[in-house]
Length: 376
Image (tube, rainbow, N blue to C red):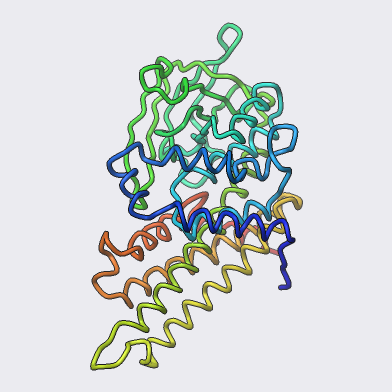
């Protein structure tokens, strides 16, 4: 596949890569997650003010630069290479896409705040009984006065602890709809009545929450009962973005593993000279290159008709899921016991590559979806 970035896209990639190399350290990031706020707000604001990446895929009239799927791929891969935990995919890609398609003054105002680094959004779509089927929703919304109120529960809402707003899917008499819940700037003391969040840290050092909703006031976004098409597209866009992020993860893991095998000695010689280990590292590189091609295919089909988009995204998610497992496990094995220590970066990357296999649909889910979509 002949895929070349434009000059502007190369500048975007190089500028972000240099910024992360000089100002985003793994140690400071893990400290913020475990002992601090769960992220680095100053870095997030720099993404908006210095780099402009929070508006890279948003319209110019809303403070963005009018980019598209390729710009998102470039950004996500660079963030993955640096193991960035800040909620770029959830806020900018998923929530940003949902808000653009919903339209209206409220959505447009939030898009401007996202581009400026003032708003962080989390999507509450998954439920305990639904698994990978986001359309199977038991949360309900009922009209009350001039607005709506929500009742139900959501699970594994990534970055809810950091969010200023929640996007919640719920059923109305007209069907699946999308609602906005204002979290008053993320201040727990000002949270809406009836909203309970149970926060926890995930295996890959991110924050998630299980949420209970009991008469929580909300605002309808888009049309009543017309959310599924937009939600399905947002899920595919999120899946493509985390696949690009995983490619960045794997590039770092493969490079670090090769370098380690050049330095680590056994029987007086570098272990990288052993043919069996060379073969294993070649296999890791091949899995990475297959993932790169699959991500390109998904990105180039994100604006295609729904069935074609879904096939390309599921093919990428299945390919990247397999590769993430293979590359991560082999990297840890080649590093030996120290591969899983807190001090070494490889263990943190391995955890992220494990989690990627389940975000926006598990590997098994996407294999099954691809089979269904390609059935004669």
